Length: 259
Length: 110
Image (cartoon, rainbow over all chains, first blue to last red; front, side):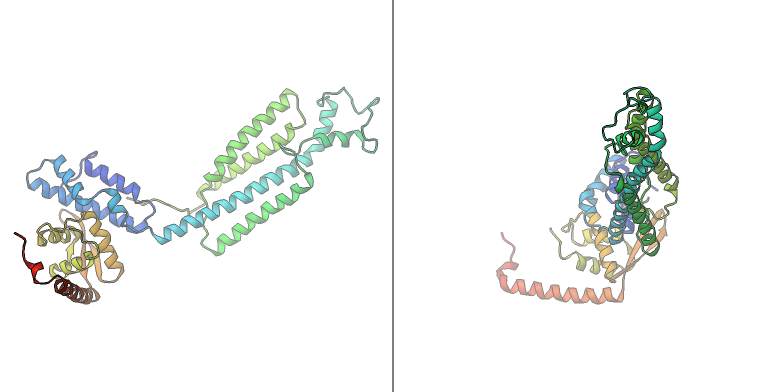
């Protein structure tokens, strides 16, 4: 049996064809197998006519046609297209739910922790006014609001602030979106996205936000440090959860063909 | 020579005459029987065979023949009927063209 050399023209041709047949499914796999069988037979014929291996491979390829010419005759599998669209929908759906939950959840947790955090800042003069700044002679800007409440309002709930009343609803919306995705996935062929697509961006966000928050704590513990820490740790948790579940997706979309 | 639009008939004709045969032999027969006139990129014949199979005109199976595995193609009954129908259609087309061109068209220019 005449086999193509490891890096010979036929092998390179088949490698290129393999890449270009991505998304064609069974039709592409069959085309690739038949192309290999055909080219090997053609090379054998060429060798029988006295050509050396290199020339025989080049002639076989020339007669077979360029990869572009051949591949454009292989139909893209309808199932593959549908599977890709389902995968895309699934990715967008889960990402939307995760982002809503992260944003809203971070705001809610930050608000819950804001009480002790504010007391800590007041006790340690981290607002930069004066020690024991809620003691006399503190003069409230708004006499109707006590010192603690006023300083608590200075905290940023999230890195870019925001109205805290919306956070619970955003978080609930995120949970609802994710629950809806779980239900739809069970009753349809929606599929599970590649969790690495969630894990990487959330991991990067976690790195930046947590670093910023930690710097804030050790530097001056500004009023934004808590929100950055919470948002960063929440993002880290989301990233790890996605990473842990990455293998729990047996029906991942696979765009390529296998050889 | 461009055989687009006629490749199906040519493949059906080769398969009808050759019987169960693998793709490489189909292509070789196509080239030999046309004296090299039908110089199609050989790789495009396989998608055409696959299309005929999807249409139910051809069936195929892998065959482990030395020295390698090959896919063997064979006409179905519908394929044989399609070949006859397409051949008749082609004959009428040729006759029509011939009638339009007239007897002079058959003369080889000096």
